[in-house]
Length: 138
Image (cartoon, rainbow, N blue to C red):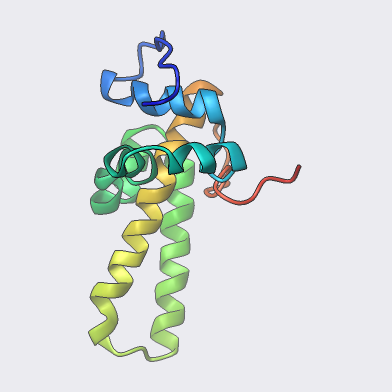
């Protein structure tokens, strides 16, 4: 990676997460302009590791709960229930079920990495699922 990989001293962080933590330490939230520019310079595989978490995609709220982020997992689950209720109310054809499930899984997968970084680094325990994912107010 193009950024300096500082050693992570936190015992809770497995070695496979060190590069993600180093990136977030160096560039900040994924939505900030410096992080977005730095992501453009990374390979496809490196970008995928930073932006997408396959375990969160497949296991959703269970993944968040196991990582200790139960508040965010519960909020994402509640958002999923509301979304499904709206789709049921609108009588969306069941042929869209797979696409909808993939979209919901992508929501879990794209929020998990930075959420866990905040959870470990800053002892961050809010209910805000999208913290650091939107545009910053500078």
